[in-house]
Image 1 (cartoon, rainbow, N blue to C red):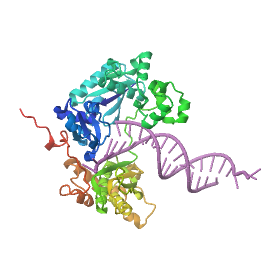
Image 2 (image 1 turned 45 degrees about the vertical axis):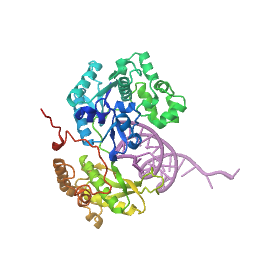
Image 3 (image 1 turned 90 degrees about the horizontal axis):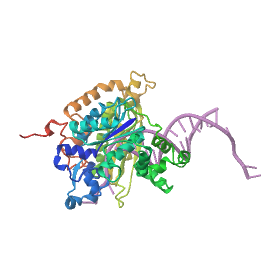
Image 4 (image 1 turned 135 degrees about the horizontal axis):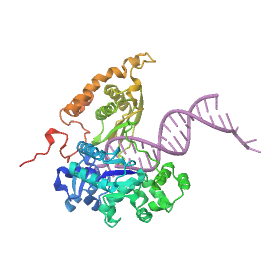
Length: 443
DNA sequence: TCTGGGGTCCTAGGACCC
DNA sequence: TCTGGGGTCCTAGGACCC
């Protein structure tokens, strides 16, 4: 038996904890550059704001409907998430943190009443971090996800499902008829693993609801679609196909990318951005104790500006030897950026990917097969470690970017002189992670 | 007219997730 | 004027092997 616990409108709810005047109002959280809506309060959903909808398309609702927008404050959300996850972990022997606002809990060995556990858990999260959640129970992870969807939808739209399924929903406790009614009342698009594309094709094949899908022939659908869909159907029928993953596996690739605040036309702007993104990616790499065997650099013009000539260079460079040293990684990506750059284009976004990741332990003390001069310029991973460790430690203690590489420091030193830097005009204070941004209580 | 029969590995692209 | 930023998995097709 599994549970899925999910915070309601996570980012908006985090903002509301510290700004209670936002409760009950239509609120959206904006992506970097205040470009698109990445979280919406229920009231904003009611106004018709869609997920990932460009801000400029809904901006008029500020005046006409009192819509409130804030810039994303990921430092705050990450910290709130960690606190929430720690509370949830108390309620089950095993937890899989699935995303910033969701975790699976494994109740296989637990004999107590699940609805009671679910209600206690919700109360604890609400009381201790102030976030509203919904809990779904099911005999497979896909059913737990579905139960969570039912719990949330029943709370938000009272006529969608029976009221007793709101907030905490255990699909395993339902009778066969009740379960069938839930399945019949849920569109396939709401299932975990069925996206827009597959849903469209299923609809064309006459499969509209979860009930239709559960009753369909798996072999036929596997042929027409793929094994992933087959597993989904089996899970909906109660056969577990997706395991719990309690220890997060190390990432297989690390990506840092960003849209620019305004377009970049010169090679130095691209180089600044690429070197900063590489530094950030290298920090993440060292955090999970891995080395990268290759780097990828890309930048692109805006596909939305159809009058602009388009150019989307993308270069992958294998490294002579896997490394986690920011200097070597930056050297590689900057060189790639200079080679790929063409003048005469309005670049709108750039990114750096670290690839062929491997555990750093594999390479410790390894002797070199090649003794050529190329390798002399790139010392073995173990010799580079102390400097990078010191840099990471300083940045952890004194805040991000306290110590940076020369090339990246050029970009961020002395205030924001970066031509490409992101716009974040509405960011709220980082209440829980910065001393100078804490809330002040006046008596 | 008719052009083998396996394998493996890699990559690009498409689908999905939040 | 203005359109997010991360990730994962699967599959098809090509290169290459004997």
